[in-house]
Image: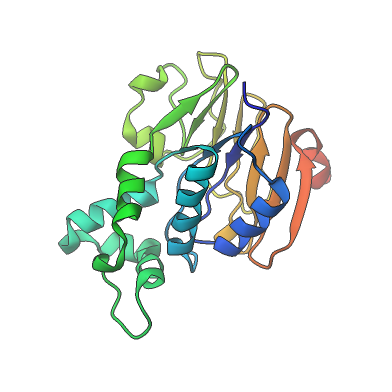
Length: 233
């Protein structure tokens, strides 16, 4: 087993927060890093985020998941006449991060290795002995291999029941505006709204320790068992 199993929440183009978070988590080759998707859109530096993830994948054991925003980006590339929804939901910022200064943003500016990362490297789910990882959610009574894509990438985290496997679900997608993960015991959501002024979260799923960073470069650390104190309970 890896030394640590780390889950990274939705980055959404926030490369400054990602850099600050990696600096305090310090993942090594002995760790497994599962990134939960939504690397692109909304924040200012989609290009920088994908560059960092590709580099990390060459240095560490990384399992990247595909989020709904990556799916929208791929669909918009393949059907540019139908790209309006993606552009409204952060695609403009994503394309702008690739465009040279003074040039109109275009899919032609996205490097081939970025497309290959999204199409070939990213997967729908991952599991270990005690946890499984999805971008958005999972039906409690379906095996992971039988989960529909709509559920894995789009369904909101609204206090789902325990999964039939008995494993703990770790996901992102549903932004926690409080800036803190939502932990149900059998499921935890670690999208903590970094692009909207919140935090980017990395969770050590075995110990419950999590680290956070924001776009200002501020960092903090806590544990899932201490979340109640952050909400004044």
